[in-house]
Amino acid sequence: MTNKSEIINGIQYKQCGTCKQFKSLSNFNKWKRGSFGVKSECRKCGSKRAIEHRRAHPEYQRNKYKTDPKFREKVKQWSRDWKKKHPEYQKSWEEKHPTYQTDRYKNDPDYREMKKRNTREWFKAHPDYHKKRREMKLA
Image (cartoon, rainbow, N blue to C red):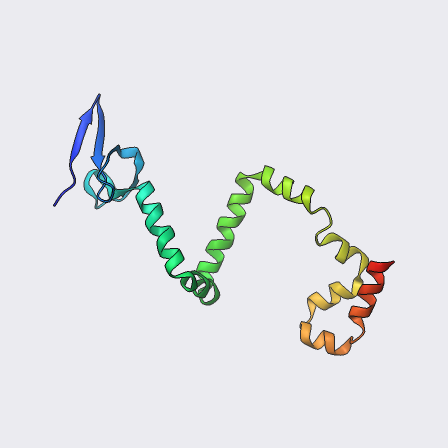
């Protein structure tokens, strides 16, 4: 069964296969093989379906991120691109957290060394590290 379409005031409308509402073609994602070059369900319904799938299968995304280096790089690139498009968010976050990592790197040379090496080995070699950190915070 094919979806219905209408032309109203010179604008092509198509019926969503899920919600059955008529919407303009701009409300559908592009897909070469679909009728009119768009998918059969509108963007809103597609988003709902994707959200439900992610909620039903939370382990899928985590496992894919852990095991697939190409996907991991893709996610990191999405994050970088989003930060470039939304510099105001990054600025507001930095205002809320002004000394997130900078204090640790500036005030604690041992921390820099620990980050460079394997953490477990470093803590074995420096058993009194946490005492020093507590003293630095108290001072």
